[in-house]
Length: 328
Length: 100
Length: 102
Image 1 (cartoon, chains in turn green, blue, purple):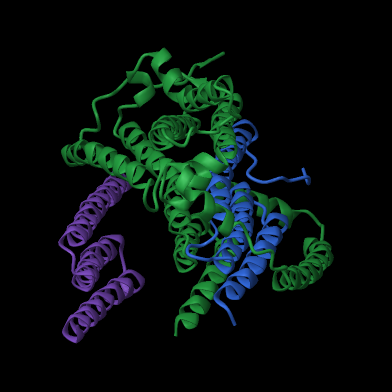
Image 2 (cartoon, rainbow over the protein chains, first blue to last red):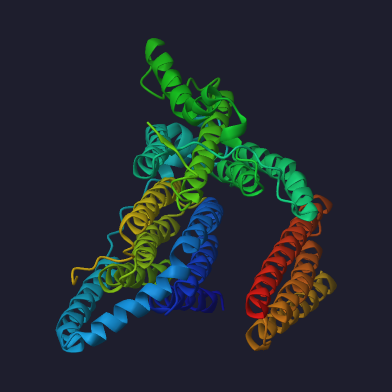
């Protein structure tokens, strides 16, 4: 019975993935991709990875979905017109496009089929290495937290997590580099709509509380810095959409501090450990729990700020150059 | 058939769908979606193996790696979207076209 | 024990029925407004029944409260987004009509 659920879920995920690539319209693609993300989140739950499920649903389906939807605003309306033009041009040309596409298409299908066979065989015969469960279980009491995934993320492999916060910041810098650092619009009166304003007013503290809850619960169960960060980032996005871009309301130095505090605090802590005679990110077991909670909070603030800034920057990308002044 | 085997096989299929999508789809956004699907396949392999190696709890190391990986994938997808939109803004192209 | 499970199953089935009805509505209704109506009304009711079923099954007041809040927030978010989509569509219609008329 439970195997049946897994099989249905697997077929659903594959179907949604195929459909999101084959859908004729871009909007359909994006929405099917949302659905694909949620199907994957269900698969994570079936596999006992609740942390991954929350992260997938929040970041991969939620945040990325918002970015895609925002990008659709850019592409869809004029894009379809352009496509018609392109087709008209192609029809006017005396080339036989179908023939030239047939051979590469068949080659691609053949290659993919072969690759699929190899991949299926590879995953079927993955050697049983035993994994690191036993090692994690043995060290769990020293980690300062009770939830193994949090222990791995913030203690055993804190180095990865630290670099990952760096990667998000790097992503933001790359977005800045491509689009130019925007001078954010001055806060306008949050849309004239009274209902939207009230809902934003209501959800801001609720999301904040919920994020804090997830952050704290990460010590004992699924949850933690990333999940909390997305919820806090959602506050920033909501406020931005409601006409109150966070980064134009706070002073510049504060914005920069929020963006870098996670990376910086983590690193300073690591160096303090080195100064104390331990290795980088080797928490003293007695204070590990408290230190992890502080690091997580800082990391969550930074990630949330970075997500908000990425969204805000992308959101203003398609506005005309007369409205945005790039500075450098 | 074990649960993890269903999902590892699915992950292989998803990975191949993603690769095919990167080659076959034209629009930038579809290419980005294909990349994310490919990444989803990889993550699914990891988490399935974590479930296979479960003792009292599922192997937490792949879980942590996948959480990290999802966030990194999303950050790179955001960068890709920024590039795509910038290209569209500057040239009006929404896919790589060589026939001008 | 048995009674609890039976109640849970009944609530879940009723919830799934409403979800099915809502999905059918989205697929079959002709225009955006009636689709929104089907989606938000029926699905929220379905979610409510499923949440109630889960709360009965878990049978812990603390968890039940959390589930209730999940339902409440979903209700708020979905009704707001429904309203916003409907308003956007209405404005589009207005501007279109205005253009055609003028």
